[in-house]
Length: 268
Length: 268
Image (cartoon, rainbow over all chains, first blue to last red; front, side, top):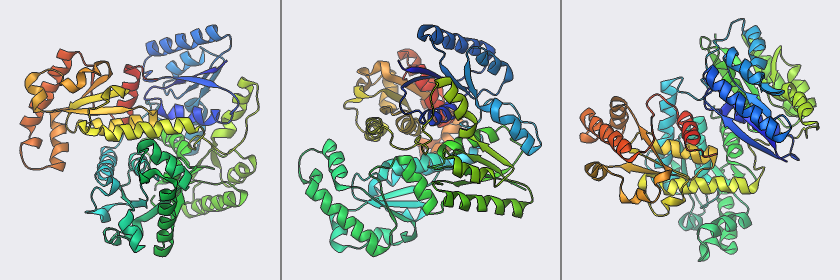
């Protein structure tokens, strides 16, 4: 039977999900089924959430796991009383943190994923717009305004990574797909010469690339293994010739690619 | 002086940043300057991180705050010995969790943001592709394959929200911009009739809309307050007439909009 997990939050639940899911990856042999109870902003809402948790315990015969990030002590108390296992992010860390800072915390509902700073938020939206407008070499104009420009063959992971870089790190991330023309020259296309220091290469194992391309365009040379092998090897040769740092994305998630690029390019 | 904060992780650092930033929002009067030390996968890397933390303490005269999610006890010990204030996510929660589950944890490096399940990961990439292909009404073909379709006037927040829904929740999120034609009829455009139950409306305060549009296109009627007022009020009228649930995005972050939609539409 799958063990039930609840994430209880006074806002989106994104922080508590991240925390809980991260801990649960340490138990790879167990199956979990999770439900998020977001926007628990009142004692009435907390009682509703507590009722759901109690019902799950009764139905399953074992207590579910409950992770919470409630900042209001009264609502947290209601949740804590509902179940044996309540892992309370704020309750656990906020006091030691108050001690460390010599200051009381505000105990206001989670602000993590709200618009706490309008300027920061607008910078993020601007980064996202820039990234969308420069996706797939759509526009190479003002590419030198980018914080980073990803280069690689079609379908090696540039677009998802760029979107993550914009969404999570508020970075203007352009990307440029290498094509036949660039390969023939084995040098950087003129459009990229103005942003040489911002380039970061992505590569991928040809078999995986072929599989990904096949899903989108099953026919024609685009997705054949031979074509993928040729493109990947030429792209890597170009990266080496032009001294562009690059990363193999084959077994690496978007988050890992993004975090690696941010670290390697010193973008924070 | 800004208090220094370090996030130490054996993988991307995204989980520990989320945790730490969330806690620090509870101290709104303090200024923090943070640095992430990701991919601390060995004792040598941990010693490097510890040296950076000690140097910060010496330079500042006060100990920094250190948040960590290291799963390897030996590397965690090195970090814990480097500073007074180390908030250790795994060390704090993993034992109580082991007790609750009656099982030892695997103590493997954080898998949260890796590709732990290829099928899940591919579903996410497919959702992202779908979302990009259906952005801004680009394609209304197979819109009924979407998990959710956001409707609203141009620049009310549809695209960023769709991207977040795809990236974070692996949802196929289409979006459809309402334009003059739709307003004249004051009814749903034919393209949306096949996915009526998936629609979710976004609206925004006209002043804010005008400001956002002005930044992109300063001239012409598109960004005038009168035009924005007219579009927003007609869009809201259409939502009500067609019984489309909608949300005002003016002071709400992408994450909050997305979490609200997921809850309202029962998408998890």
